[in-house]
Image (cartoon, rainbow, N blue to C red; front, side, top):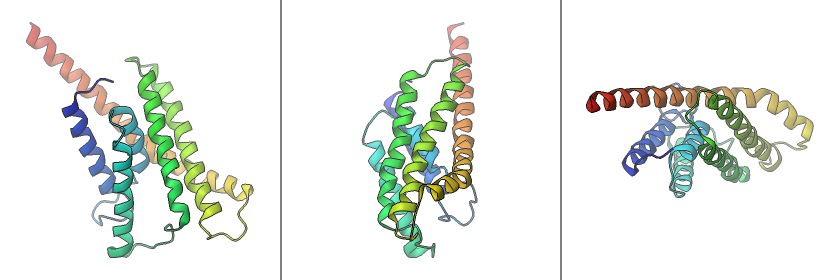
Length: 189
């Protein structure tokens, strides 16, 4: 996808705002599932600068710290395992980059998108959920069996939330393309 720097900036700001509005319990009036996984994936697809990833990770971390410090959110997830979110979110961002390189303007490409989203989300969960299980110190005897159970419980929920936002982004993208194509044909007439 070849977006202008201006459009990339606008999309980057929109993705950062979406993450801020949906990450945890940061805004009491907005009760939407977290868009963080989708934000990292979509940033990989749509935004070319590599510095976007660390900026989004910094935003997520600052939101988490602010929530714990000032909003009374539990610090249960704040542990040495928190740093496993770097490769977790990195797998989403890299999955987005991978998809961007394979993207074609064809309806059949939606199957490829679904596959890349699913695999990226699974790898993300292995790092985030597995990392928390094994490195947080919250579980005395972590095992692969526990990880398997946790995958069965949490991966489908996280994948569903991610698919919701990526699907909405696809619908918006297709709608905008159709609108601009219609306007372009009117101008040429």
